Image 1 (tube, helix red, strand yellow):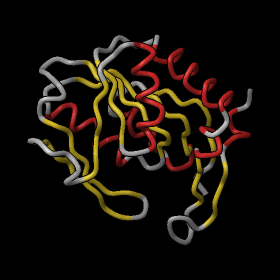
Image 2 (cartoon, rainbow, N blue to C red):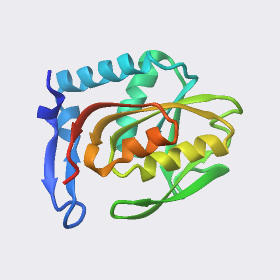
Image 3 (cartoon, rainbow, N blue to C red):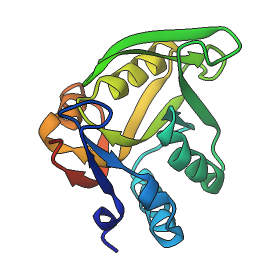
Image 4 (tube, rainbow, N blue to C red):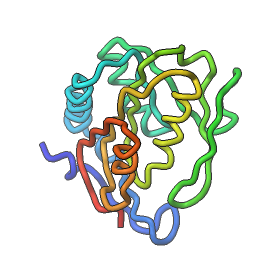
Length: 175
């Protein structure tokens, strides 16, 4: 199955000049969604990890399914002020703005190995911030798995240069 066939491209969203890769067309197809989860699980078998983390919000769709199937704890990296208890926070730059993500301080224990799953990597700012949250929490990043890599925006390359393991299911140009 070619998962690329299930990704819709929307020009000038969320702002002019951005070509948005929409995963809603993939997740609404039960066979494509199941195939995606199976491929993430297959890629995750290359890595030893204790917990699965995902980045708000589309990463939750994939990571929660993988977490359930693999019987691993699930950690949410959320936007600023969305978590009710004590948090670690990291500010970062997006391709189209600035943002902050947070994690509960009690989500990651010292030495926990965390696999981070997200729907897409573009410039890598969000993924790098997620790695920082793991490290601030005294955990270690086991690796990243992305459904989509926008290869010409070099986010995956940046993570690899920092020593992280990166897996992508499909690739598109970013523009």
